[in-house]
Image (cartoon, rainbow, N blue to C red):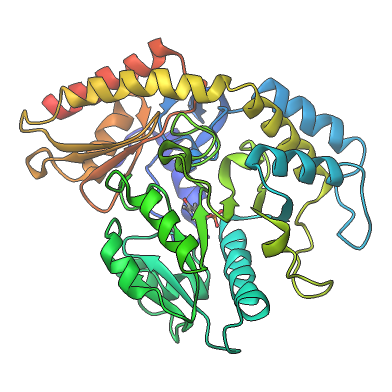
Length: 405
Ligand SMILES: *Cc1c(COP(=O)(O)O)cnc(C)c1O
C-alpha cells in the first residue's frame, strides 16, 4: 500500500533511505504516542493493538514510568558494573521477590537474556549436574522464537530467521512443541535444560495442550534438568497472570524476562533463578556494560511495583475474556479459521480468502488500527493492558469490518 499524501510519502522515504531492510514495517511514521494511541507525522491517530510485541504492556508514556525515568535521568544513568549504584540492590531484590526466586542477572535485550540462560544452564550442567565438559545438551521446541543471535538462530526452525547465518552452534535438540513424549525421549544424561516459551508468541500465539507445562515440570524435576521458561513475551501480565506458567501452577527453575520489564522506556532483561543455579557465575565470567544500569533499574522498579498490585493482571484477565469471546464469534464464518491465546493476547488465523495477514494489517491501518501479521496468515493482537474497553471494542469493530468487507 502506498500513500498518496506527499507528507507521508516523504516521511516514509526518509525513514527507509539508509536503513537495512531487516524489517518490513507498515507504511506509517509515528511521531508521538500516549496510552494505547499513536499519532503519525500528519496528525492521524492509530490504536496500537501490538504494543511493541508486549514491550508496551503499560501503554505509551505511562506517567509513573516517565516520572521514574525523569527522576533517574537527573541523578545518574550509567555506572557500569565496575561500581555499585543505589538502585541495583532494590531492583534485584524486588524482581527476585516478584518471581519467588533468589538471584537476578540483569541484561538489556531479550536475546541477551536467553544467551545468559543458555550459559547458565551449561555451567550448571558441568558444575552441579556433572555433565562431561563440552557435552551439554539443551532441548527446545519447534516454532520457537528466542531472539536473533547466532547461537539462538542455530536452534530456530524458521528458515527466514536461520538460513544464511551458519555455521550453527551445536548442543541443541529440537522437539515438536506440545509433545511431552517427544520431550521425554529427547532428554538424556547430557541434557542440562529444557528451554520453552510457555505460549509461543512469534509462532502465532500457540498455546500448548493442557497439562504440557506441568508435564515438562514433572519430567525436568525427575531427570534433574533445568526448566527454563522464556517469559519475555508471555510474562509480566500479558496472559492475566504475572507469568504464563502460573496457568498450570508451574514454577520453572529459571525465568527469562525482557520486553515489558523495561516499561517500553528502556531495554531491560533479566535471568531470574535460585542461588543453586545462578550461583554458578564467578566474577568475570559473564556481563554487560549496560546490564542493570541505574536508569534501567529505576524504570524496572516502577514496572515491578505496578505489577505487584495485580491491577494489570486483572485487566488482562477481564478484557482478555471479552477479547476472546468477541474473536470467537468470527471463527467458522469463513473469515477466521482459528483464534488462539490467553488474556489480552490472541493469534487470529485469517482465512486465505480474506487475503494475507499483511493485507489485513494494511487494511486495518487504513482504518486506524495497528497490528502486525506473523507467519503469513496470522494476525497477532496484543494491545496495551491499560487499554479501555471502549478502545478495545473500537479496534475489534474495525477488525470485523476488514474481515467481513
Ligand atoms: C522478543 C522475544 C525475544 C527476544 O527479545 P529481543 O529483546 O528482541 O532480543 C526472546 N524470546 C521471546 C519469547 C520473545 O518474544
